[in-house]
Length: 321
Image (cartoon, rainbow, N blue to C red):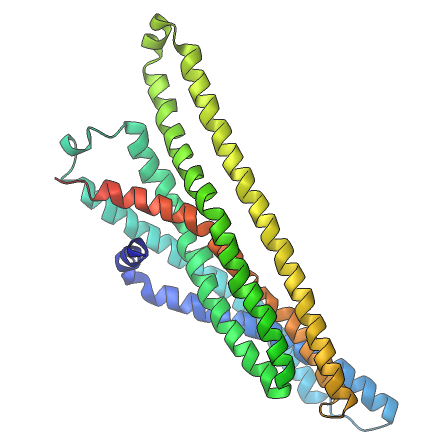
């Protein structure tokens, strides 16, 4: 993980923006899950009180629901604004750092790199790192914090339901992401390598087109480019299938977790250990918290290709003077 530490060291000037973006992400998840939970509890409590003819104070729950709805909307906008601002600032710092490294290297030390390869590293590989904070670091941090807080919340009302959710959240938030990362390792790395080679071969063929025509090697060069394009498409299709597997697995674990909470909560309701509106609250809360867990597989799905792009950038930057 040296490349990640190095990336964070380069972008340490934007640490405040990054931290605020993560905090806002946690706030949005909290507002959304609490809104779902409180809404379910409110509706169920109104139904129970109406059926039993018991007075019910609806002012405070309804006011809290309005507040959470506004907080979720405003928080989501602020979170998008801050995280994207942090991403653009990080990319700006990375490009400045990289060009400062190139100044003493050009032109003699970069001669053994093809121009298309250097341009690809400067543009495509640097652009690929925009997902590192936005879609990997921030989602993992937000998901981890939110899942831990959610388990504490569920345990407060029903420890047995919290144990059931712990199992499926571990499967969805740890097991599935690790499986996705393992499956994405080779396709992600190869897709970056093939794309980089393709960016090298296309300008090379265009620059030497006269020699290729004289030597009758145009078709051979075109076949090489077509082969690389086919390899890129194959690896991207593999990554797409892995992403589909991740989405299906997340839906399976989410449904199983909600069913487990329903089963354990129903036993407690039948034994009068918790009120029936609390069970509705826990069910909706459990359904909403999987939004946080759902970010983890997609984050680790992108990690191999981003790591390969970072390695290519740092390899070029570390060229000896």
